[in-house]
Length: 443
Image (cartoon, rainbow, N blue to C red; front, side, top):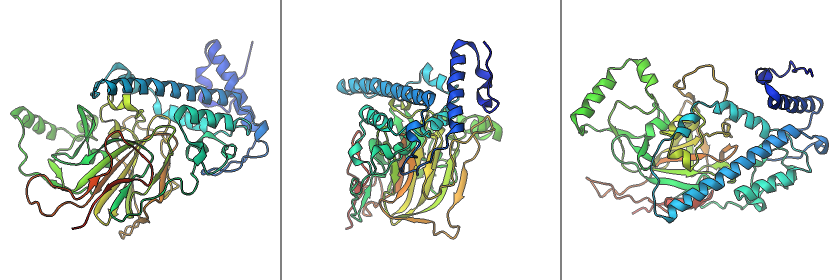
């Protein structure tokens, strides 16, 4: 039996082997024939009306692939939650422990897989299938469909449903001027004050990463040189000297994003909060305070998963992954938001810069190229945002890292700072957009 490979599908011609791949060829050929003969209307990102051809626009291959992917994600989530709950019941704090699976992930073309997943989620679903698909998603990932702004059958694709808006009043904003609100819906993984050399944030017990590595070498993070830093041992001192003698290309291959040759410490009053968004959460990112965004950096990194298992098996996870960093100023000083991409979530949409495209194909084999940086308003005005304004959106769940300055007590001269700012939340708490993360008082 002979069959032709369509000349319009160069991305699949190298994979037609065996009966299984022959069936895959038939599936994708059928899919693209339907795409070529049908021109459905596209809805806007925030939801819109599907075309009148929606009932007849059937894409069996893409629909089956999408539903299978959803099933795999759901099964994996149930397994991870069960293991995590068992550990919590036993009072066990999970530690960093790399395994073979984590090493294997580094060999997979996760960026290409994520782009293909994005292609599937951007396909228009038949109108009759939309309520069933979105309700199944809501049951699997605990989404609240009562909050969505539009009827579910008006979201033409999974992508539009992922970045859906909510009904007015679903996320009331705490407008207390001495309050910093949560920018996203999610679970608090870590929060606290940055202290010590390097300004490290704990990923999990036994593994940390520096804020400077996360935000970029050109970040205007308020740090001070630690002149009195002493090495813990002679061996550490020798190691530091050897590192400083490396040529630039050796440094590039030796994890350039996490090595900092200068011993610096954060200024007092510098805090952080790490929030994880599950796939079923509301995926838009809002402004935590009134502030001015001065610069944007786009790091084109890897796309590892960022779930609980990944955080304890992949070192420097948030530093390695693709991310978009926004930096600016608010009335108390420095403010930065890092939106971390993940597997199947390579697309981070920035509402204040719609032309930004993430998870683009890369020609370079190394992922150590400097970030793409864009300065908003060189005169220093920047993009002004009010508390609660929309900033960006993920196509699925991911992670947001918030780094900011807040008021501290001026009465202490030495030792640890006694901060006037205090968090209203703790590790493991679930937060929603508009709820207070922390407050402070003026004396």
